[in-house]
Each structure stands twice: as C-alpha cells, then as structure tokens.
Length: 103
Image (cartoon, rainbow, N blue to C red; front, side, top):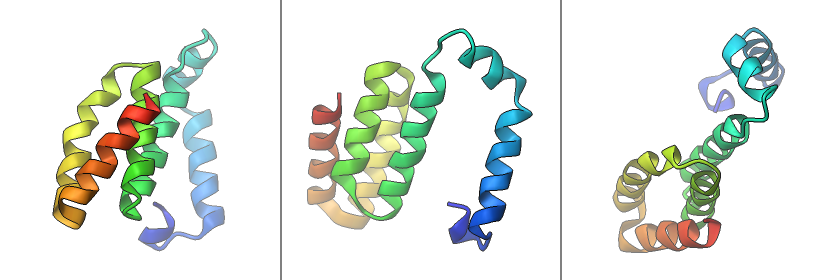
C-alpha cells in the first residue's frame, strides 16, 4: 500500500517497524498469546489482494481471519461492494467462495 502512495520500499518497512515497536497495545496483546496480529496481517493482505482484483484470494484471507477472530466479518460487506463495483457478479461469487474455503 505504501508503494502505491509514492513511498519507497525501505521507507515503508521503516515506518512499519517503528510503528510496531512503538505501539504498546500490540506489544501487550502479542506477549499474552493473542492472535490479533495475525488477524490484522491477514486483513492487510486481503486488502492488497482486493486492490489487485484477486477476489478469491481476498475472500480466503478474510475467511481465515474470521476463523481466528470473529470481528473481520464486518469487512465482508465492504469487500463485496468493491468486488461488485469492479468485477460484478463474478467478483462477488469469487469473494464468497474464497471466504467459504478460507474459513
């Protein structure tokens, strides 16, 4: 996502590393065995897949995230709307099938 905004890959990595290291909430949750970091990563990768119109992959990643935690389900309507706007019925069908197989 940062590359599409004009940042270099090194700048994006540095921002991610510093943002991660300076976030006390993420540190506290991850040291207690929470899956929130993995879920957030899956949602970010789903956003990247959706940006590239890879609807089956995006659905699978959101499905896997929803399998670990329930709250990523709230992103489903936004993904479905975007799939409908860009790929029509086939995009929504691919997203739904990916979600089913991912979950």
